[in-house]
Image (cartoon, rainbow, N blue to C red; front, top):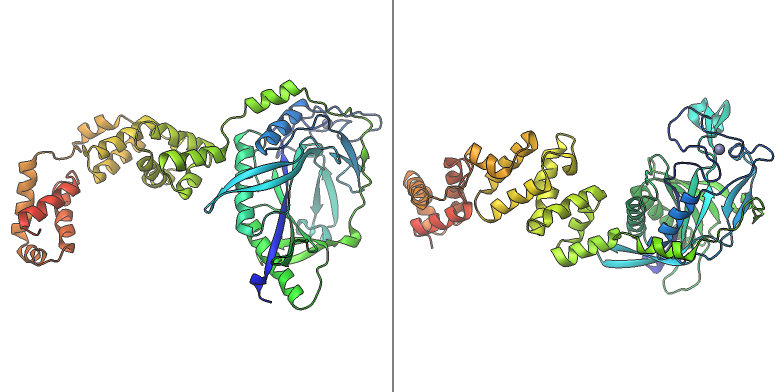
Length: 485
Ligand SMILES: [Zn+2]
């Protein structure tokens, strides 16, 4: 069998830290980078007798996320104790949700170059994060450490765990899905989505089966992928590994794996025999969550346009390509900026200017369009001046450069710098005739059919006018005056 005889089956689990002010079950502030153990209390340190209280904002964010994921919002959901013993968990259990999650089955739509795809969402539930272990010595690795200490600041941070159906079949689709899921959650203010800092993490469940088979093969779990590229590469490496084993007549062992991006190697973290038995049971210290249905509906109605709908609208109404729409939609401020310009100037040209010239000019200054001196109205004016041939492209770039540097209104910059297109037809004719006279050899070759030389004359004319001539008009004049047809 060759590798196209196999089909990969992939499901993703995402943990996203919610953007609440306080922890999931106590009033401690959430913080990143504060001194260790400065945001703790009897609840998140698990002192005997301390009781948890559910964070209402976390419930609200979970419901908003559920709506965006097309999920059913449960009438009644229940917190459960997930028991395991580890130093990052002072209660020796994590409060999570088990058989009654807050968000039930759903369907997430995402866009790929082949069009819209959907991925089934199994569930999304709330839980608290564990504390952070710091290993001292041995380069911070547990195995070689002299000792470990615990920072409880992160302990009790609200997490939303989203579990998808095993319906993906390749790494690129998995990365597209995760990218757009992240974009949607960030757009809705549910998480900051910072994968490097770990506020969003993804695991992939991977198995392979012969093409045409309907059952599922034995799966492995690839843990904690913190970038889209690693997710894509990790999946490819694991799919290849499984196929190689099966083709050699071996069997897949169910286990948890780590993908090392620097080497591309996959190593085992633990096998099924070591897997935990969490002995879930309902959390007796917390009431079930029974959200008011009017509130749930209110949150659904208040949902803004989702990133996928925005992208599809741009492609449909503005004629943008998939790539234009992808680049311009992230981050959301860039999309807002683009839309403000596109309301005043032709959208397709707007997309080219924002993606091309504007970002290139601003990159050197470390600025983003929406924080630059180029207001949407100013950029729209420059584009309009070009489209109406009032200024040439080189002049437009000069005007934009000036506005980036000093601000100002494009029309006034054009007047002040004398960049207006030369509309004086006799003057243009004179320039062209002079050029033809000065370059008789090239003029003759052009007449004999060497069309490329038109570009030479246009270039010379642009030079002579400091870029203020309309190249299209010059090109016409060159043909006309040279009799080149
Ligand atoms: Zn606390």
